[in-house]
Length: 253
View (tube, rainbow, N blue to C red):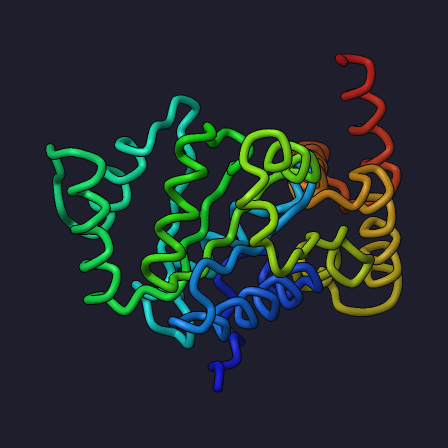
């Protein structure tokens, strides 16, 4: 059984995207162990959709609420099997100066000791072929589930650089765009709570959703600018302010 996640760990924790992402990752966790050895899942979504924040929140809480059960690796632009091994061992509290092979052996032991069930790799599009091959080997040796996160072009990247790894992919999840209800959750309580204030708040949410194209990062940044402008002018947040900020951004661009 998996512990339901009801805590608000991020501003987007109440969105549909978060609920669906956590449910997907819980399902991946259920595949861990010897029977699921070498299992690979893909976590896809466009830039700014909240992938990194979602994965960070999930790793912080851990599978079944156990911190340490999920290991998160944020890919460096220049990466090698040795640099990844050192980084993963470092996240487990060990500084490694030896070889890749020796480090992989130690990593295998430590992952078993801490009860790690999943290794999440953010920005997997940056992974070089040797590093991808090492990840596949690590999954096969430990039974730890691998989750590779990136944009939709990650599939093409894997096909061209590590076809055997792509064949091991069992599950795929795409982060859903925001809905109106999601934007309202991000905006928080309605000032005044009723009447015109409530109507204006919902209309503003709709304007943010359209102007931000359903993208978490764009919507949040736009809302911050709208709130700042409203405070400076001493007027309520409104769809007109969203339109004004959007037009000003387009002129600058």
